[in-house]
Length: 291
Image (tube, rainbow, N blue to C red; front, side, top):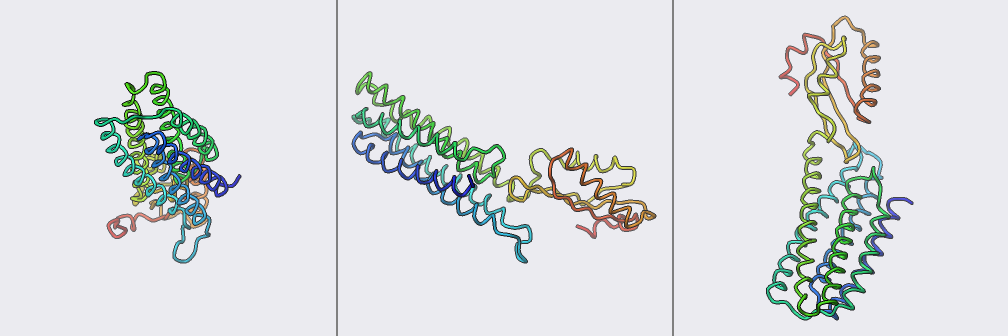
């Protein structure tokens, strides 16, 4: 199933859950259901954003965007993760207020809505399961898994209220606080990862010092400078480097060396779009001109 269709189906499930949870929250007087509905609303926005970004990312490169549109996925992931953190903070404030001034919570609608939310979020997250998925898709799935955890916590709180009555009414806001803490932690992690890509930090698993040392192992390479590593969109990585070689090496030998390096690079470090510029010793003595 294509990513766009999976995102669309997950969005439809999430929209249905929001309606059910808001109605149940009104009947049950539950802050945790309001929190869950709020998170699902953010999920819906993130899924729509992820769907749009996935469509944009499919556009081919052009004269203005020679690398293509992969960064649209990263921008969508950063936006949805940031909104998740902000909404979670707002929900936490509501939970604290309910913890200080608990109300009467009716467990039956709470249990029904939480159960439906748990099943719906798990199924929607399953639709987006992909070990090699883009950060954008992983961010949307994180939202859904977080809400599945929220629904599970609300379900347990509802069971406690059903068994012990009003004495357990504080379980409802406590469940909200527990899940809020987990969501903020994961949201901040996703924001950090998205920001690292946008700032063109070295991708995880690629170390510039290790790559430099590997290049210098070649007997034809005397020096390496201007080595840069960055990620294009989470799964696509790129590097560039200036390689100093003996001035007696011909252009055809340089081309053969570049092809050999790219092949070994793929075997040792995974797929990386590599660009090598070969220089003689005289050019290398003026490295500052390349900066």
